[in-house]
Image (cartoon, rainbow, N blue to C red; front, side, top):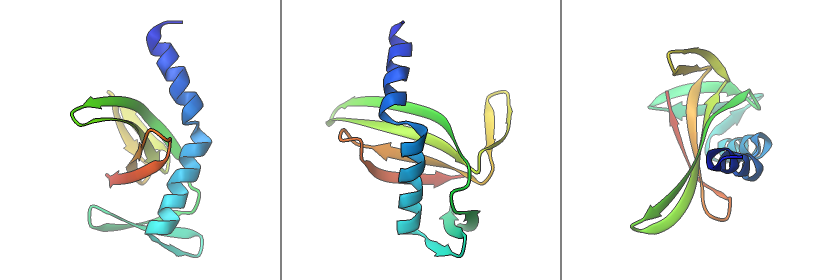
Length: 115
């Protein structure tokens, strides 16, 4: 197994899809309003109503070591609502993208939402 595949395997073990899903929806329920079976997100100033526990598709898992200041983080990018289409490497999400930031203790500490 080459180094890249070993890193990928480790990221998959540390951040399985179910952990990402659980963390994202726990964050969503704590930061946004829940109305019936939907969560009302505000993304770039626009309200987005999505079904609770809709599909999430992992687009990227990125481990990063920063030297100034010294810390490590892992970013997980997901397509909320799944991937609707992909052309020439450009992915279109069902609703929006979420970038989840994890610390060295594997805890979610921040989330960015974007179209």
